Length: 185
Image (tube, rainbow, N blue to C red; front, side, top):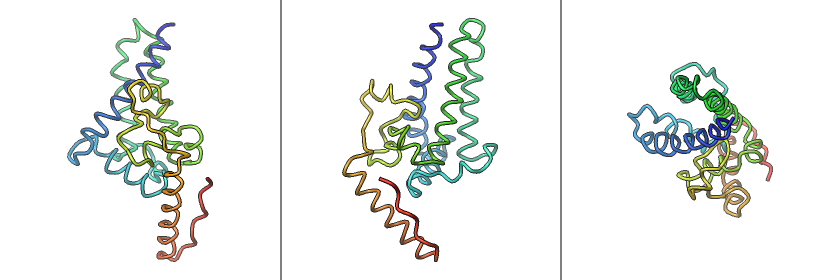
């Protein structure tokens, strides 16, 4: 049974490491497999107030959401040989991967849910420093490693949200569409 808490600690640690070193480290180079995260996902989220409209498309495809799912599945396959000796550990990592996919997708299709339930992930995308707040599911390793930087609820976040709403209203007016409703505070 020790495998369950160990799986949670390792799952969150791998999430932190992969996000920091692969998705943001190697992912900044456009030729990298990992570039989908920085060049597609982050751009989309910053332009649309934490929404990634591409989560509406099917997960199967050679795009950011498909590569994310493929990477999670690949991680699950990598730990599968350990199942006979550490079934609770491996099972927890499998569950962690599924949970990660679920909450990450939901956070970018329902930004108000993300603000309430995953503020550290909202801070990662919408805060001034996108090279902090690496954890998605829980901010454990961000706290341990000192990479947690709160943004939600600060004066800066309030000013930034007002500016984004103005930009979206101008864009809607230029497109001839009705202005979007102001985001709740």
